[in-house]
Image 1 (tube, rainbow, N blue to C red):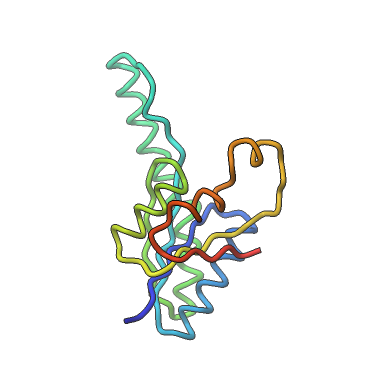
Image 2 (image 1 turned 180 degrees about the vertical axis):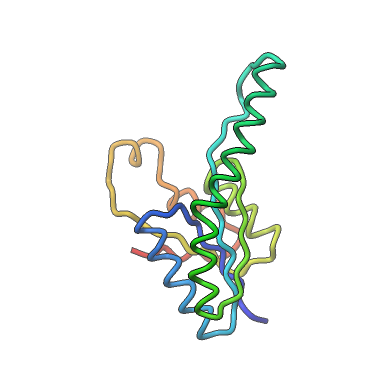
Length: 144
């Protein structure tokens, strides 16, 4: 069975390193890459029907913008390397959503980049990497 590597991708230098790692691995092993971008979105708001309609419109615009500005250029780059690539853009908590994408697509591994920041926020609230290590249904590779 060939590997399907889910790469958490946000266009940062860290996610580019993770993508490069996953592409090289997929090339060597005949696997594929699923490029996943998660837009954080809180469902916990009390909005009027008009505000809900505006919010839905903004969500669709954000999804289209993420596809065009972030995913399409990355897919073009990966396709040049001859690696099969798919994309997935979803809203939600990053770690939980990446884990769900893996389960939904029968992925064999998650690859994410680490930026090395040690901000107070990461220590108080936890980082994506530490959250993902706890909830992932498949092995995680964290690329420095």
